[in-house]
Image (cartoon, rainbow, N blue to C red; front, side, top):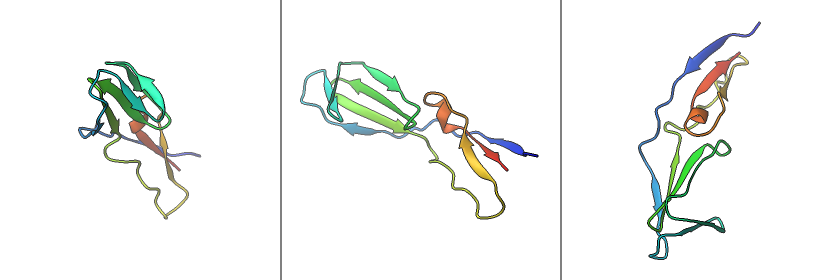
Length: 92
């Protein structure tokens, strides 16, 4: 028998900006991004956006919950692209 309970996590309101070369494109992890390109990733669960030469990266907030040392319950992402992958359910 499994017990399910859902946790909703807020879409993050923080970001990290990586300065570009002053033009409208970005380079991130060796990949060129055109101005206004974005990616809603699920692994890792982040939002990437190139805007005017700045790469913005947003992650889940709060971060992935830690599993309790009590019992055999653990948190599992509900999946999907960002921000859906920021939501977790606890499975026991």
